[in-house]
Amino acid sequence: MSRQLFYILFLFTFVSCGIAHNVPKNRYPNSFDKPNIVNSFVDQNGNFYPDNWRKTYGEPPKSGDINAYSLMKIATEKGIESELKGFEKTRLLAISSKVKSKDRVFIFVHGFNAPSDEVNESYEYMRKLLKLNANKDEVVKFYWDGLHTTNPFGGAKVWFSATSFSQMAGEFGLRNLLNSISNKKIIIISHSRGASVVLSALSSATFSESFAKGTLENHNVDVDAAKKLAENGNNITCIMLAPAIGIEDFKIKDLVTGTDSYCSLSKQVKKIHITVNNTDVMLKKFVGFLSNKLKATDLGYKVDVCNELVKQYPIMKYTDFTGMKSHDFNQYIRNPKFKSMLKAEGIAVNR
Image 1: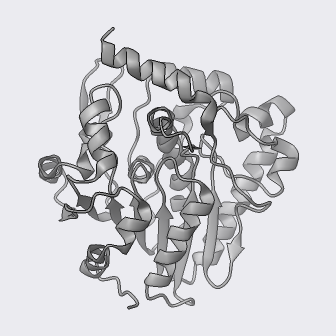
Image 2: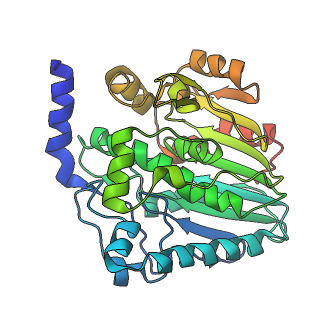
C-alpha cells in the first residue's frame, strides 16, 4: 500500500465520527409550497421521506455509516415496506397532477457535503433570479443525502460515500420524479456532485458488485431494479455548475467482460451546458490528490475532458469560470456568467 493511500484511509477513519446524514429539518419534507414549489427529499437510496418521518424512522446515527440507516432498511425491519412505497407512489402522482398544466419545470439539485438549510438559501436565490410565471412554471427543490461534516478533514470521507449516494439518488429518486412528468420543458440546474445525480437519472449508473450486494443485504434495495427513464416527450436541458464528475461517469461497465462503453442518453436530453474552472480549489484538490484513488472530478476542472466528451455528446458545451477560486454553490450562482448561461439557454432572468 502506498503511503498516500495509507494516509487517505487513515484520514477516513479519523474523521468518520464527525459526519452526519443529510436529513430533512421538517415533518413534511415532500410537500408543496406556494406559489409554485415542489419539495422533494430522498435518502441515501433514493427513497422519498414520508410525512412525520422521524416518528417511524428516527434520527440516523451521527457516523454517516453507509449501512447504519436508510428508510427502506428500517421499513424492512418493521415490515412496512408497502407503506413506504405507497407514500412514494401517492407523492409522485400528486407531482404529476401539480405540473400537468405547467409549461416549464425547473429542478434544482445540490452537491455533496451540503446541509439542507444551506442548500435552500441557494435554491431560493435561483428561484427569485429566474423570471417565472407561477401559472406556467414549477420549481422542484430536490434534496438528497450528500452527507455533511464540519470537520475540516472530513471532506474526503464525505466524498467517498456521497459518490454512491448520488447515483442512487439519481436512479431511484430523481428518475422516478422525471417519470412523473410528461411533455414539458425541463431545466435541471445542478452543483458539484449533483451532476452525478442528474446523469444517473438520465442514464444507467454502474455499481460495483460489492456495493450492489451490500445494498441488497443491508437495505433491501436491489440496484438493478430501478425503473428505466420513460420517454415522456419532455425537452430536457441540464446546466451543471462545477460538475464533480469525470469521463467514467458517462461510461457503463460490463461486469462480465470488464469492458466499458459510453452510455446512451435519452433523446429527451437536448442540451448539457457545464462550467469549467481550473481555479476551483475544491475540484483542484480532488483532481490533484484523490482522482487516482476515487471517482474522477475533472469534467468541471479540465477543458480537454469536456472537449473529449463533446465528441460523444455534441449536445454538450461549456462556459469558462476560470478565475473564481470558490467551489461554493452560492458563489457559482452569483457569478454574472451564470446569468449568461441561463440566457444562452433561452431562460429569462430578473435583474
